[in-house]
Each structure stands twice: as structure tokens, then as C-alpha cells.
Image 1 (cartoon, helix red, strand yellow):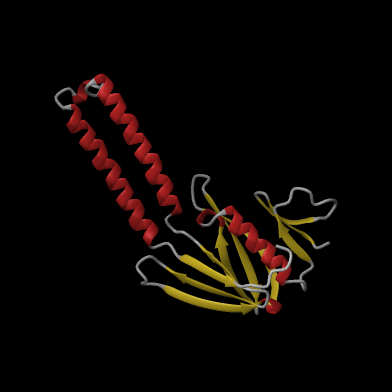
Image 2: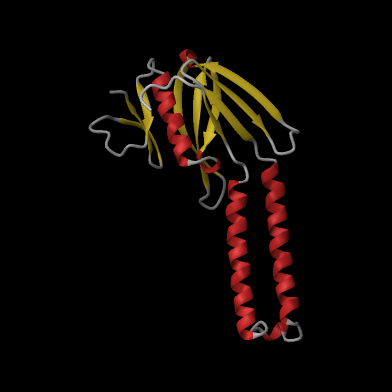
Length: 194
């Protein structure tokens, strides 16, 4: 991807975490089904009067409630669609219910700063996203946890190509030579342009 000439669209998936939760809880349910089928009923005396089917139904209901709460929470997360070429970038944010929408646009020639940002939201969980400063306004582009690593890295490459006026680039390449690291977020580094 040396010379980017076409428009590229990057889309965040606000249900990416929901899918992982569903896979994890589904695996847990299958594990419980196997245990109950082997032992016939739960091993705890507290549930002695319950049938194996009743116990499985209770576990399934708990899992479905957790998934429903997770789905409702994720449905209000903003989904960004970022469409860029070498001249400009359009950002459209909405949620699952379309009760929120926002549209922004900036020219790459107006960009004065870019940064990888790490945002913590409890118990070691974090988001990494790219923030672009253009015309004294900060634009939040893709969030790594809501998109593929390939798309995230491709956007970084596009930013590098589109902002030759900046004295630095954001890279995930571990071989940066003797260039000074200005900002480091996980494996993403803001370093001087070669």
C-alpha cells in the first residue's frame, strides 16, 4: 500500500465485545451441560431438590440476562464510520438505535497534531484510539477495541501518507532506530519522521 489513491472506509463494530462475551458465556454453558450430563445434577447439596434440567434452565436464564444487559449497553456505544482519502477525512458517528448521530470532516492539510490515546475505564480495561487535531478541534478516529488491528494499522499508514507536514508519525514497528519516542501507548509509538 505504497500509494493510496482510492477512498478507504473504516467501520467500528460496537458489538465486537458483545460477540466475545456471547462466545465465552456459550462455552461456559456447554461446559455446565457436560458436567450435569456426567454427574446427573449439581454437586452442591443446596440444589439437591432441583432436577438437572431445572439447574440448566437457571444457568441459561442467568446467561441470557447477562447477554441482554450487555447488548443494551453496547447498543448505545457510538459506532464510527471513517472515510478517508489522501485529501480529507469524513467521520460519521451513530449508535445502534440511530438516536444519536454526528458528522465531522477535516482536510489532511489542516491537521496540526495526531496522537495515540489510551483511555482506561476500570479494572485494567482500556481503549486505544487515534486522535487528530485539525483547526483547533480534536477528532476521535478509530478505536482499536472496536475494529480490526489490520484496519487500525492501515489508518495509521494513511495518516502517515496524508500528513507530510507533521514532523512525526505513529507506528507499531518495534524497529524505530535511534528516533526519540514522543508518545508511547502499548505498542504504538509517536516518533520523528524519517
